[in-house]
Amino acid sequence: MMSKGIPRPNIVFFNSVINYLCKEGRVMDAQDIFEFIISIDERPDVITFNSLIDGYCLVSKMDKASGVLDAMVSAGIEPNVVTYNTLVSGYSINRRIDDGLTLFRQMPLKRIKPDSVTYGIILDGFFRAGRTVAARKMFHEMIERGIPVTISIYNRILGDLCRNNCADEAIALFQKLGAMNVKFDIITLNTMINAMFKVRRREEANDLFAAISASGLVPNASTYGIMIKNILKEGSVEEIDNMFSSMEKSGIVPSSHLINDIIRMLLEKGEIARAGYYLLKVDGKNTLLEASTTSLMLSLFSREGKYQEDVKLLPAKYQFFYGFG
Image 1: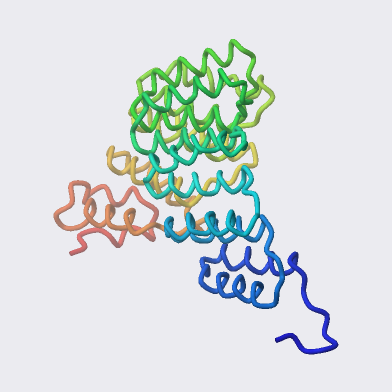
Image 2 (image 1 turned 120 degrees about the vertical axis):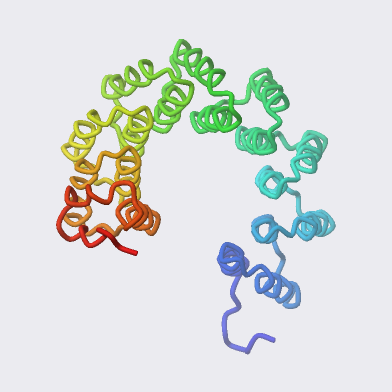
């Protein structure tokens, strides 16, 4: 019971509390607030129900989320596209794409028009399940129905095609979109550079990297990381110094993970002196060696290691690995 003389919070306040609790994974606490709202005769609105549905989806309680939808309808609150998008996303993330598709097909019957977000969720769910044929059909349906395709949707499709071993198809789609003057972002280009390396179309990858600035975009840390790691995989160790230098001159700070990746790949290729150069960068940037890097160094430079005698090529502080073990 609310104390007399104290203004009672309105539904906007309660919605903010429920939304916060749901985002923090505390959906049962949010449910308690919801029940308190009912007990004081405050009327929940569509935002209240949507937040609660999202909360149950986030903790993979899809039956509970569906139950909230039923309660919402029973209370006379009309679900909206956000309601359905939230539920469809929950089913997709929880590997229940067919349940999500059933709900998706119900939307027009409820006079709710699926939007680009809805289609993006379904597409991602199909790709996540490895159902690339169904994803292609859904994409064509999206186009036929005149649903706007945003760059984030294209990025999702291109990325999912690559993850499903359809890199050549992704490249073909990318080229088709380019001919249609679709404006790409750096995420698109990063995805396609990586895809081109994946199917050994290195010259195209290099050309696309070189064309980034001309397209009005700027390479980011991910761009350089993709280039450096793929160049190293192909054995072109001499090129990475220039690429790394270009990255630093651009004002981009390489991540600790990238530096560790470079060190490990160089060590595995027997490029001990060059690995030593990047170990100095670890020291200069207060970057920590990852456990996998330290483990590799132990195995290579210890008593039984294949590069035991080359440990002197490393910076002095790392030469204690010599004969270790």
